[in-house]
Length: 342
Image (tube, rainbow, N blue to C red):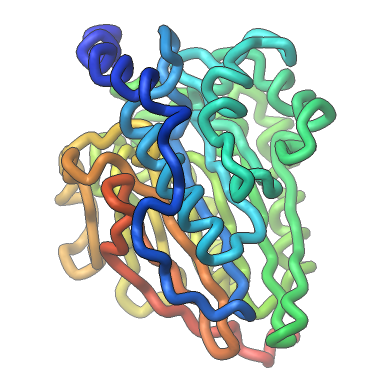
């Protein structure tokens, strides 16, 4: 994102800055919710702007609607999949951006739930270790290491959810805004990358008993937007997702909402990268067969977007939602993994 874009946003941001503390979640009708359902939220590329007021209109709209959704659906946690602070991450654990772009924006009681965080390319431009260290400062910021995994028991339905979060910058190397996924330089440390690949396969192996298995990272495997597919992930991550029957891969990096599914594959690919800005690019539309693209929202008028994931007795549902009125725009149903994997 360019400084010119930030400047253009500034006047709109000022309006939000004046009205932000008067805004109230709950100004829209409540969703009809089954209390026993297990829900969490997902966002990426949500890192505000590096000048006052340090949040964008899209980020504020998304935060407001996420607070409504978290309240209405009793959300248990949030996945934050990188580019947490634009443009160059943070400088230290005391960087005011933690308050200006995070704490003061996602301020409502329904947002005071665990946030499981990984870094994106913009976070690696700064002091990524400071974001890890912030885990000891904030009660809700869960970023214990560059990559980490979590298992959640859902006793109401006797289900188990496993989530494995990877650092795609360590795996693929860092990028500039215009670098495509096929042009990434490769890892800056082959040793660190191979250690993470080894860790990932062990985590996948250990998660065979999970009813739903999600892998999340910043760079996409598949995308038709500005950055396109990430060749290193297509070559090395995709085979692991297939081998271990992963339910879905969540990511950001491209600033829109996408659902892609290969023919004859059970893995669902979701790009959820429009929590701070929407970019209407289909630069890599020819990188996948047309039948693989199931849905895309790159409409700037949507005021950004995020995802709601709900596990019921029988299935897991992912719903794309917009910053404008918190509208549901698309839903995918996913089945539990075969019990033969136990």
